[in-house]
Length: 310
Length: 310
Image (cartoon, rainbow over all chains, first blue to last red):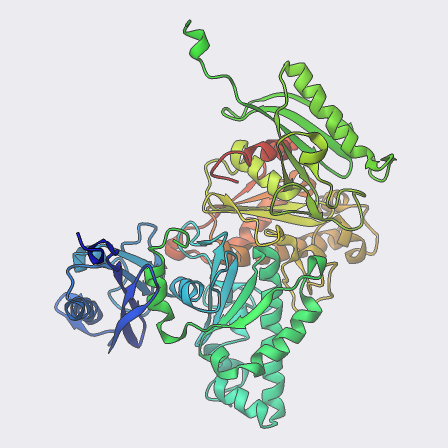
């Protein structure tokens, strides 16, 4: 036998990040973490093709396209989507209100492949751990700031899924017990003070979104400065609480708001942590921006096939 | 060989619960969870015998006494104590202010035995998982209500230790971002609204402790009723936050206050959870009182030798 034939065949898998707007699919080398090829198509939530949600057929098309371009037969698929993934990893068990047809949709059955389904925030964290800002961490959490506030936790090298897959809903911790109940009935949750959805209530529609708020604050708008400062302080309070519960090495800030605000988030946040973080022996937790980028989710879907993270 | 000689020798270990007041030591069968023999002695924190804290010599005496009464040679020892246990499990790394001489005290070296050191709340939870109210659970947390508010988390069948051993400090989550900073710099923490230490501030010294407060509330004292109701509501807010992060099957309430208050805690707490708990698919988390009793800690010290929990 030639020496070439004894080289290990790259172990490839497909990561699908099924989002509300787009479906991102990547062909990834499981051993090296290299992304070989990526494709993206619109989700078109709410459209059906017969009994099947259109996004499901699009996912199948993307899987076949990646396999065909790679010249390989059926590959394992990691698929992330909003909602709570079933303990079996075959489907999303719970996702009311949007992504019509996703709840209980059996992906291994539909794709006729080995498929493991993962919550989208869980996938984003595993992506950061594998190829991004949380590389090398065994205890770390991610908070995502976007429409709402999401998150995920890695504890002792393993994803914290919890009993029904809802582990890591970090936007739904209370930071103000007397505040109004949010969508999940949590009083005064972090999500009530951060993210684009609650901004309309907090700012009476004055800013189109948090980017606009942060820009206005930078330009000297005092209302915007006050609102942003309030948001960052509530976030700091949430983070110190979570540090005391989860004891991470690092905290990752992700989502469009964090990426857009950059230092305008990180500098005041660090100042609040200097005031409120419990630091036994003087050792503080490192705060960093997510760095795995738009393909984090598809990386994370594949990362769950690695023994330590899943 | 006779058939009797092929029976497995019971695998015995010693669990030591080194507390601020007493040291409780038990000889426990690791395979069955049976407690064979227990001894207790006062801690006498602050007393020294030469260079050694007196409690350390007492621990050695207790180990030797249990081994001698069992007629067995050196046994493995699990030892729990307040403070943060080192990742190596050889010592308590961090415990300022009391238990003088405990910080960095190397127990395997001193006892000349295999020793694993564990935080006391971590041990109490493992005790509940092994022989108490959390039996059979893989995702569960314990909140202890006593002088302060403590806790511990089991996630996916494993103790959540975290990066520096502080995982599960559930009393130090904020429930009121605008509240005063507690001992750990957390603003408006759960511990500020519950437990005997903060009661003196909250009630201006009117009640000797939470037992007295709960008794007064039962007898119709309206101030006591208001204070107790407030405490229970803050506790409920903390619990729903933690449920959204940790997604447990069960929540265990422990510590002297929970045991003493019983239904006066559990009934209003359940009512608040009915209002504020996120229940995907209608499924709520079960709330139960701790049941492993005063030896929970020494059970838990031994339980960490079991592969799944440690």
